[in-house]
Length: 112
Image (cartoon, rainbow, N blue to C red; front, side, top):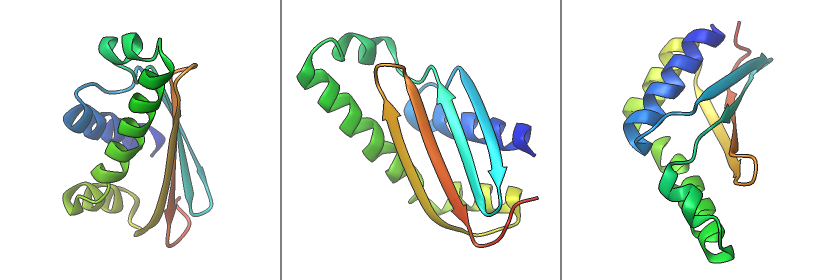
């Protein structure tokens, strides 16, 4: 299940962001699915984060974009069909220094 979830996550990120994470680790903990993604930033974003303003812009754009992705009912349906559960909340953030993003999906029931 982790592998299938990672493949779907990479596919969605690649489609909406333009590139997918280099490495994804996903864990299922009760009704939470926690995904850690490394290698998210594009070459342009790496250049931009060399300044404080660039860091702010990239962080804001990345977090807003990811939240926007999950407002798409087609995307939500793909994750819900895979897990056979309904997503009730999503939390996401990215650490620009380590190029590591974390997304926590909260479902309406435990994922097996």
